[in-house]
Length: 192
View (cartoon, rainbow, N blue to C red):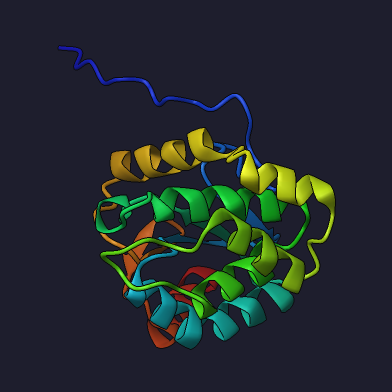
């Protein structure tokens, strides 16, 4: 018996550094793959970045891991202006400029509260400037919301993989708690 599943709404355009599936931004080239599913409006994702971010960066710098960041639009319902989608889209613009990690950290540092409006598109551009994204092409990308379709696709694909909350972390496909110790243990186990 064949079960019909809807096809993913594949976007026409994906950011630089996108994964082979097109649903995340790849950082590093190590043998162990860590997938992180985040939402820039999620307070727990901000906490995850603050506590685990340095560990993730170290694992990449040491050549141990490849990290795929999946910036989801999961929490649009907790924003009056679709902030999760707009922030995810702008992170794609930052990836085009080679500054995805710096920009993501800056977005979490300026995270608005849930339940109201998010940061304006102009503020998203300003944040980009603060991390070295001063090119007019970055501003055009953010203001034009160039990666909204990609952001929806990232979220769609995460849902197909059973991701129902942020942050969610997997190490070589195995779900692990979103904390540095669990991630390090899983990476060590996979690496042998």
